[in-house]
Image 1 (cartoon, rainbow, N blue to C red):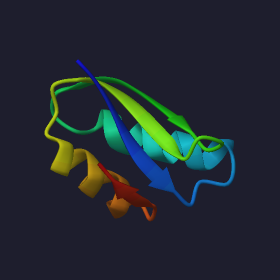
Image 2 (image 1 turned 45 degrees about the vertical axis):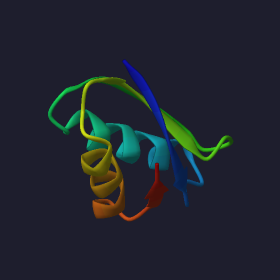
Image 3 (image 1 turned 90 degrees about the vertical axis):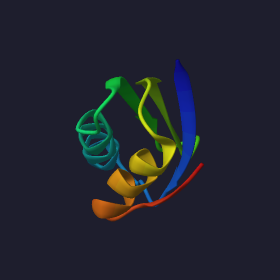
Image 4 (image 1 turned 30 degrees about the vertical axis):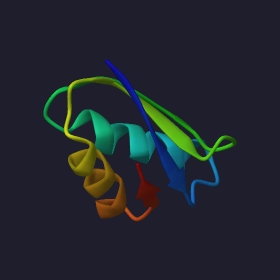
Length: 65
């Protein structure tokens, strides 16, 4: 299953990597791709949406589902 969340505050490739690392650390995520130009991140797997948002916020970015 694919889920897309809104992520704001990413300004560079390093930011995208931090968000992707945070998301892949969530239980149930099999892959994550952050896109700073689209202000979003797409996640593959069956993770809880609230856990995804919390993981992104924990590394310093604003997120919403």
